Amino acid sequence: GKGVACQKLGISHFVDDKIEVLQSVFDDEAGNSRILVERHQGLLFHFSKGGYSQVPPTTDTSQLSPIMRRHYRSAANWTQVVEQLREKLPGQLYSRRDLLTPPIIRQHQPGPSRVETRPPGPWEKGAMQSTTNPAAALQWSEGRPKLVLKPRSAQAAVPVSKAPA
Image (cartoon, rainbow, N blue to C red; front, top):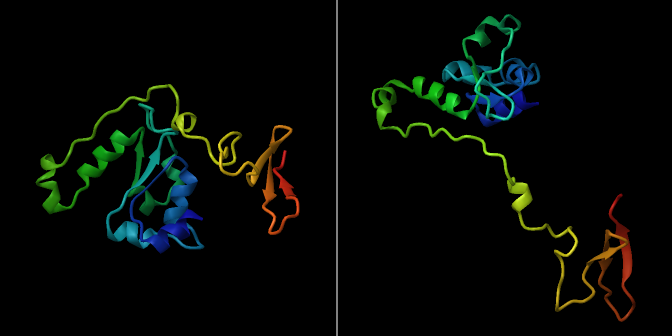
């Protein structure tokens, strides 16, 4: 799980919207990052779903181990995460924290998402149009993509597979 990954990567601070994941980072028997969190006074942020909320998630902290409670923080959005991190800076940086860039508060604005405005992928209809190769490897048949291998000889192209429905 994520506890094992955090151990391998040496992570001492972590943000997630699921308390089970934070517990895995701190207490997973298969591997965890507990020693690093304690050594570096790390923080485990329980984040509101989506990150645009104004209300932090509520959790019964009695379910957490007493040692984990010292590192557990609840945050409604990224601005709150940054503010809490600024308060936990090491001594030399804390005395000069006013020189650090303050968090920028951005409001979520509904509208076209990045996914809707991205260019079409090579698997999408019309994306593989080629003027130099009329027998493109990805052809469309009955509204579905079909992969066609180019022949090595003068034989006709052989369809290999169709995309699943």
